Image 1 (spheres, rainbow over the protein chains, first blue to last red):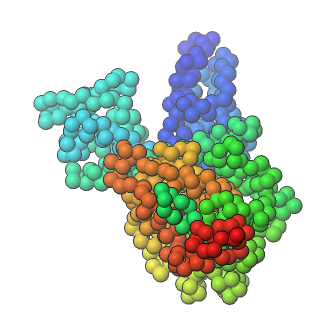
Image 2 (image 1 turned 90 degrees about the horizontal axis):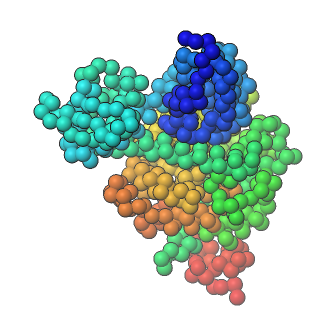
Image 3 (image 1 turned 180 degrees about the horizontal axis):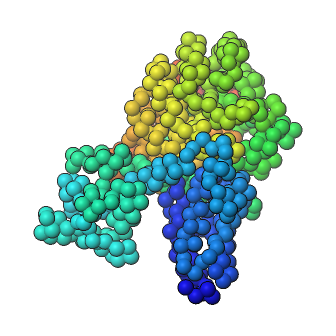
Length: 249
Length: 350
């Protein structure tokens, strides 16, 4: 690796796009949390501002460390410095993230294990994405029994393409389904460990049990509720963000 | 009364406050952060021309409150929900004694609720009895995320809390309003966890638990609990103002609530002075589910449902006979002052 190589802004933004607000399941780039970005040789400095100064410290921590780790995964980057601005715990978080401390070291009285929080939120995101993926499959004409039986190897999908191919009846034929809902779901299903092997089923109940065909409609209603929770909270955060901008502080 | 498509809708605003966040009353930076956070919520969901400045918002007069609720706000009755926050405010933010002045002056208009904090031990139990004796309360508002010394909150399903809930049952205080809601700096988010309501509601079937703000950001956890427990209700504060700014989102949340929680277990509340009921009541009454939402949820947010949400459900919980109440309101001091007697079938002021 040439020491003089410098990452491009596009590379950096692409990496940051992979970091989600864990509660809202949306990229910190799309949510406009990235307020400043400086690339200085192999060093990258990024400033994050969240919708409220009192956004959960655990969530702020996940986003700040996520940004740091994504940026440092770029071969041209030696150091990524993340600065969280205008947050009730900015000082603690900035020190912890940039000195590579543990959350529990920085927040001694935190009641929650941060990995447990991350896991809960990722699982909710998975369920809400599943709702959209299942909906797309049902719209494409699959029946409940076909949907619940799908495994990773039955699906040929890539982000950014229009359609995914879903193989049915022992690969006897394939159905075209919009790619994004399926790709989004698979990404999260892999992240939470629901899908590890090609033969793993890709859909599961909220409790991560296999879904019976007869229960799919009920399971979809539960998943829809999770989606409404995430998007409802998104509406509240967006409102607070707007309020803060209106007040100009 | 609110008039909708030619018929009357009796409005019980199940969540109002008369608070004091004046700088003289603030004794901890948490008090300043708390009112500023409220004001951010206010600004976020209030139409620009209806927004209050932070100074108006810190403290408002009893006269203004009465006008905002009953003259302009379409409320027929309102339920006071105290919020003490004694660590932040010298005389408390919004105590039962503050609210009692108005509640006693206009006794047919207000329901006065009390509060308890199980960390207060025996003295707290005696205080609860005092509230019952002096104010004949039938409900309490609980703030599980309230600070007290080193403690940053308490749980509704704790042993201490159960002792207080037993006392409530014994005294006939049956409406247990738990603030479970959006994060409010500087209170600890996890003390707003809604799951402790589950065990409490199962253990005390004779009590009703009203989860304020329908549990957001734990809306799904709340809905699951409310589906299983018939004595769990949802308070619409924070959600109701979305009816104006984000009607589609409001429709989606109402669809989920009606589907899981049911039309008999949802209560309207403006959360005054977070929001003025005038435009919030109008927005909720005008709200409709989209065609897509009606198909999706297989139900409607129709007039009959709105009547329940806006008043009948609260009347049931607080043992209010709406027809009898209208007779009382027809010639009470507020109807006389604002010339409202007509709508209750009473004589006009002139």
